[in-house]
Length: 297
Image (cartoon, rainbow, N blue to C red; front, side):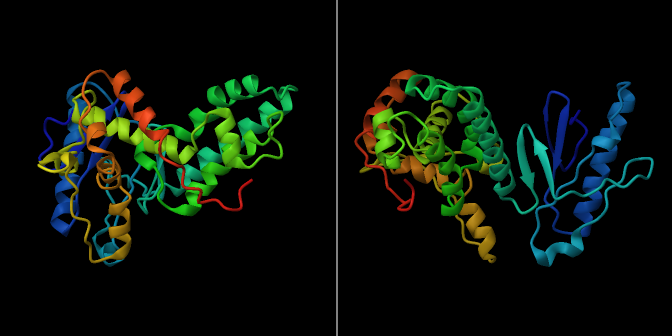
């Protein structure tokens, strides 16, 4: 489908396709419109048809670049409506380039599921409660978390509150401090779980077990004589503070930094994925959880 595109990048999954291009001038807009027209030509050549009602347009932009926003059109002259957010493979993407809306949505769904569990099951037995929690709630609040993992303390607390509330309903733990509950239940905090997933994902990229990110966003490694293998950290300086903050929280900056904080022997572990997970968990058990939720019980 993308063989005729001259300027845009296109990615596809099943029957969904996204076109992307950086717009710096009015000419860039024209070039992207031309590539969009070529996509329609491809459908005609292959006896296919786009569902125009499902077209979505999202723009990430600096306030000073609003004059570059144009209306993209179909060959029939219909304008493609610009939206503030779209759902892409289960993740809500918004035009402010943050994942706040997705976090609010996923934690809301998790709380609904928690309410259903507490209404439906009379038992508060730890084994039953943990089985239900890990099967029905955890997947809702951790889906694709290496992509949207928050660094904002408010969002971290919002997510953590789901586990805090659920564990407080388990028999024998009602009046126990949150961190003590985690210790007795042998659970990580949700923040620590996300950090673990991120480290594992970066290790998979480095060892070729999953595809790397594309183009300039790719995760790259360097070798330091004293510290060993490290992920290269791209520059984050930007003229607009918000852009710098977004870069610092992104998958290509925050996550390599997290990986680089590991001891050298963990970063340079090779072998099977299961052996890496085992050694990583042994290391994480030696790290005291930073209790940044003093009011949580």
